[in-house]
Image 1 (cartoon, helix red, strand yellow):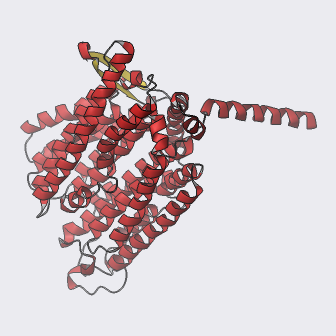
Image 2 (tube, one colour):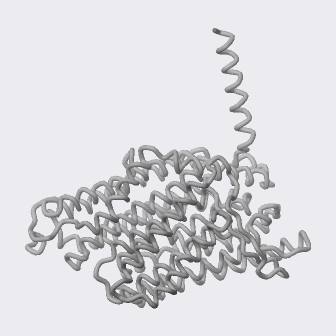
Image 3 (cartoon, one colour):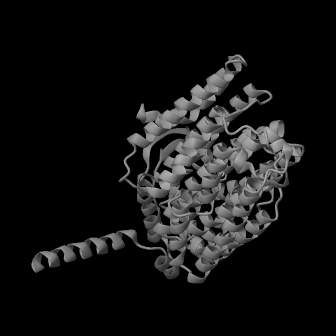
Amino acid sequence: MFDHILSILIFFPALAAMLGFVVSKESIRTYGVVVSAIEFVLALALWYAYDPTAGGMQFMEQFQLVPAFGISYLLGVDGISLFIIILAAFFTFIGIASLGETKRIKDMIITLLFLQMTMVGVFAALDAILFYVFWELSLVPMLYIIGAWGGPLRIYASIKFFLYTFTGSLVMLVGMLFMAYFYFQATGQWSFSLLEWYRLVLPENLQLWLFAAFFMGFAIKVPMFPFHTWLPYAHGQAPTIGSVILAAILLKMGTYAFVRFSLPLFPDASYIFMVPIAVIAIIMVVYTAMVAYAQEDIKQVVAYSSISHMGIIILGTFALNVEGISGSVFLMLAHGVVSGALFLLVGVIYDRRHTKLMSEFGGLASVMPRYATIFGIMVMASVGLPLTINFIGEFLSLLGFYEQSHTLTLLAGTAIIVGAVYMLSAFKKAFFGEVTNEANKKLKDINKRELVALVPLTLIAVWLGVYPKPVLGPINSSVESVVQLMHDKAITPEAKSAIPDVVAIKRAQTEAATAKAAAEREAE
């Protein structure tokens, strides 16, 4: 089975979705839960069979699709993509399991299963065209989710989401086509394989142009400032499950693509753009934090908080070293867990009150103590409290970038404090004080169906904050391979000095440890 585990993970949800059309409306919820649970178990089996000490690709599958142009069905995972695939399976499972009373629930579950296929496909694809196909296909289910089940401005929000991301993707496609053409010029053969593209050493000026082309597609998907304006509308109008999947998984496509494409393909351009991108990332953190503080809608607070934390992920990614990139990949997972949980929590109160305005709440902690406890834990995780999941990723991201710029890291670290201000302020407004609104006095606390979704996320947020090694170890091994590839391919002295030589560092550490052990033996 493991010879084709990635293909199974990609196409099993799609096949189940097509069979879902013949399932009765009364049975579709159970059907969706069972299908997504099987997918999640398969994803866990992938983790079980994965070798955490190997930094390269595993479970690879390949066969030619268009041999004349080097387009192939090429799949593989490493520590960078493995856990995002597991996260996608997990959130699809808990998203379907926690669905409340929803109009056209059969259509919703089928759409979510199709969306899961595209998400896993993006993170498993190692052929650029295959990656692009899954990348673009992911827009369609999310467009439908926002447009069919969203709020009053759902059509505007869904069209804006689609136009922004689709336009950026077209620019990215031009970059991919040019990369394949350059490969043809260099080798006499066409190829869209990322692994073969990694062997190319591009001139610096060409790197700059191609980096910019890929950057447009990835930056809009993240979304980075100033391309972020589609996201608050998408989150604000999307149903709860749409916001959860968007925040937890779809935004990670952009940051993941930077690590998979931009850094190893264009190391010199990545170094040249490092400081400008870091400045944009800090603006993201500060600006969106200030906007979040000004919001009256609690869902918009979480939405702008999501953008703010993505800024730290970008900062770690462009630290161009193992600590920073490992921290950014870990923070992708942490952000997915925490932001996804916060959107689920907002959905819980919206289902009861049909409003997201914080002025309508107040004193909820005394009425819904279990709900307030889980919300409080997730708020603490969001602001990066030590021993919670976000702290590990933020600390490593900032530690990595500290090696590149002390000043920018200090600014970014200070900006994180602003995040604590708006999240704690929103928590205070909604949960503390007296219950002044009569409609809140009879609210029911969180139920069993909602606990099934939220308790596992809460446990993960604490467990990986206390003991991140099971996840951080495989991530670190794969990131070391990426950083070494960047160092080997860098052609300018500045980039070569900024990107560490992992092999040389490990050799020096081994020699130092051997010398220390020898000295201790002599002393004895």
